[in-house]
Length: 69
Image: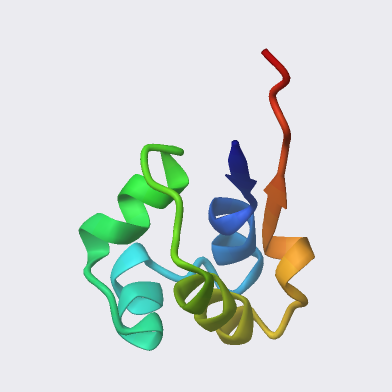
């Protein structure tokens, strides 16, 4: 499972809107909404683009949690 800190990072960055992040990451606002709700895991390319928007390393934006089952 991939979790993320996108919502927190948006608010730490002058309360950036989902639409603004989507524009800067070249995706739709619906994609950002789905990511924040953990309903969608990003491609590696998108994960790097979002991290770049925030100026953060990938692991500060996304975390992989292995679910052993």
